[in-house]
Image 1 (cartoon, rainbow, N blue to C red):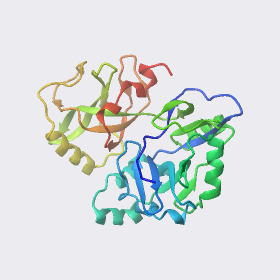
Image 2 (cartoon, rainbow, N blue to C red):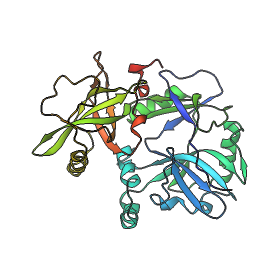
Image 3 (cartoon, rainbow, N blue to C red):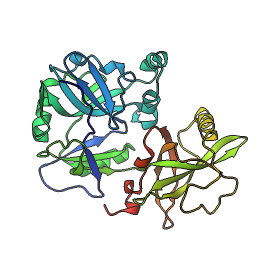
Image 4 (cartoon, rainbow, N blue to C red):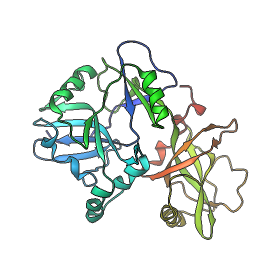
Length: 320
């Protein structure tokens, strides 16, 4: 098997759980989507944007220690914990590393777990046309769980799982149709996500500073017509001082004389406009009638294409 990375199947967002006995619910882990490719001689890892992550997670490269297969493609989520709760900010500490020495140091400082929930290829044959139920049974046969490699569980009572996840401040629940085939580079309602926390990926279009260090980010989303609309500013969250120093260095190289937003923020004084290249993940309570985030909180800087930062991420701009 020649390894050709694929774009994985994605769930659509929903506000209410589906009905019917053919649906199962799974925990929505706040991690990084990683596909594991093993061609019989070497293992490689790629994220959902086809960026290789083989170096970043070396603990998952000895495939035979957890999977009985001559060749395989596995789909799952790499997660890291902040105390007892999965944290996207924590796993991004691993995902952004480039230097071998830093990666080796992080193995013990920021341990990660691979949560496997699907299989696309097994022993030189695609299984994407098989039902999810069949693919899960196959996973049960060939995966040998260990401390940092686990199979994602199914739950029959989705609303009860959602309530439990809310109590533990987890990200949400994913519902999957057991009869569903795996749609490569697809996204439809046979997989549905019900999120507890509202979050999105946004583009930085401006910054404010205190003592020459950035202390807040002016954020935007792209519309279907390509306009970047302003959705609010955020200066709180999980970023540490060193993160703000790094953001300052990056945005100093992106300073622009022009506001990139199609709707200029009301309080634009003391703002340094920047070219829209830096992207972040933000949590928020809700959107105001005026189209701004209420109580936004920056979770982490992310390395994604700015064109993924669209209004389609939120129900405030679309019908669910």
